[in-house]
Image 1: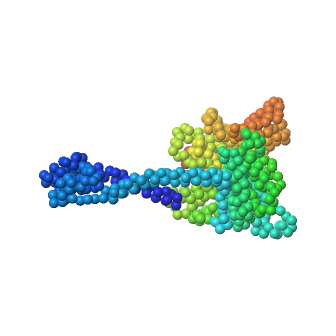
Image 2: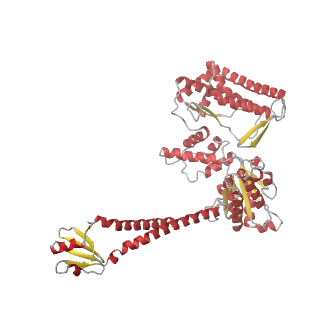
Image 3: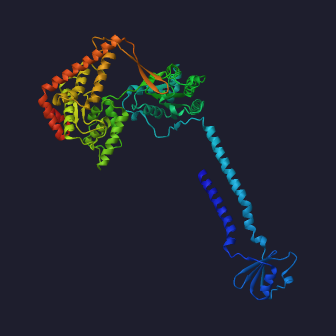
Length: 595
């Protein structure tokens, strides 16, 4: 409505200006009368050359028979008869000049008033809008979801049974608080959801609000902090005030670590805007008002950097861990994200769940969406298993880069490299089964060997780590075995192998010489950015021993890979020839080489 009224005002002003301009310009468009004396007009009348005379006050306008106009002025007290001009000689018309010039006069008076008034009105509106924005600057930007909005319930959240059980008590308290108060129980004021990105923390918070049927305020922690000092604290106060007015309610703060970091680590000391905002949250969560039925939920994937005052009892005293989904949960998540998609009869969700070990719920949703896009691209009516497998490869390994054309020599080297990985991984017991080998570029890699675990693993042995290092070095060993030369293609493999060996020695205590001790402490500092440093808590002599143990693990794993490939060199060449021809070898075809 404001835009419409403003446009109407602009149109009216433009029309008025146009009318006034026309009234000023129109006289110049017509024939301008020639200024002369009254005696000349009398001569023309006596010569019978005048067809009409117009009189307006003291102004006399004579129109000649040739359409030329003469204009003169008479004395105020004199009349035409005094000049010998009578109606029997010429046609005389008398007009009221005041009436003729009324509109230009009105326009000339009103136009400045309208223009100035319109300008003042516009300026006042702008000033009022600026004042309103200034007054609203300290208000929170939280989004309110009413109970009548589209509800998300625990049925929409697959898996996470233990996490949901923790939150059922929150729902019960919001629905029937008397049951808890009669027993003297107090529900936790703050619930902190902790887990890796994409595991469903925000979804779980929405589900709690949907189950309880209460208003749900959602805001990101970064929306509190602005460039002006005190705004974040003001928005916190406003947000909690709104939640209390709508109690019982749930207040959800996403990415809590944006403002909840430990105090005293940034610039500005106690006057740091982020710290003021955090102080206000601490006060609001455990201040003098203890009877408000507002539950604060927050989500973070960095609980280690949060301020201890946030985690003490009375604030975020209940922590719900949300981990990556296991095999059964992945299958349930896939079924939820396929509800509104036409699935073909050959789709096996259990198989897809086995292929997606280690992926989060957000990754699985992305896979199903990519599968739908790939199916639509080929004008399919349903989503097939093959399209889902292609979507898994795209998400986990990167998109295919068929435009990257390798020379015959590079393709052969890449094939030997990938088959070296696959052959070592197949013949060593600690490696995962080979799912696919390809020399088609994906992402930055010229080819890939894809291993998939048969089940979810939570504990890793020293033997498994060594076999994985041997598999990572299998490509490098294969190149050296066939060409007696190595290339830069093993750069990523060597980096990963070295990291595993270093962690075995310094983190997991898997070195007999070093023993069960953790060496080196990683710590994070925040000063003009994020820095992660490693504190050296061991001597130079111990550092030398660490290097020796890492070299020993790498060397032993390399020898094991060499033994496998030298013993199966014929099979290595045979599989490589097939891979060069077909560019991709799936697991069933790969298994045939070993029968």
